[in-house]
Each structure stands twice: as C-alpha cells, then as structure tokens.
Length: 128
Image (cartoon, rainbow, N blue to C red; front, top):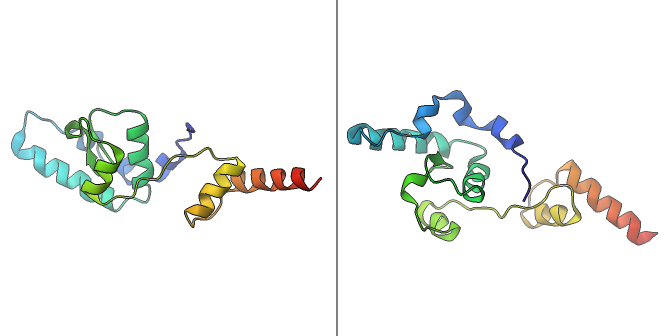
C-alpha cells in the first residue's frame, strides 16, 4: 500500500475544527449532535473513500473518518463498515505500476499519469 496522502489536500474537513472529528465522550448530549454534524460533512467530501481507507489501513481506534465513528467500530471489518454505511471501500493499490493502471481500468476511473507511464513502459518492454 502506498503512503501517498495527497488526497488530504482535497478533504472538506481541513476547513473545520479538529475537535469535531474527535468528539468529547464526556458530553453525551452534544456527542450525537457532533457525530451527526461530522458525518454530514463527510457525505459531501470528494475524498470520503480515501479517508476511510486511510483509517482502516492505519488501524485508527478513535475519531471520525469517512463518515464512520471509529470509537464504535471495534471488531468490524471493511465489509461490515461498507454494509453499515453503504460506502464502497476501494482496495488500495500501488500507483505508478502496471497493476495500478489495471486497477484504474477495473474501477472505470481515469488512469493517473504515474500508472499510465508505468503501463506504457511495460508495453514498450514487451514489444522490444
């Protein structure tokens, strides 16, 4: 898995208070309101899936990532989280590789420059 976190630049949460993503459990009345507010922000975020993948890959135990409250997810798998929230969780792949280009194609998404270049280099090698 790649450690590329460039997607964070596009995250909507960068424009909000950090405390919103790590709600205070000592204030039960405000806790639910805070979690719902964070989830609503996550729903509008263009990198929600990347955020959730990041949290799962890094075994986050607390906080709200990709609309999921990780303080309540103990023992849940990606499949469980996907089913619970209706969020498609993408499998991570290494960018800048031929396999990365194939992953882009499988997902019907634009192929990034690094993956496109890697696939072209492999093609040129095979033709030579």
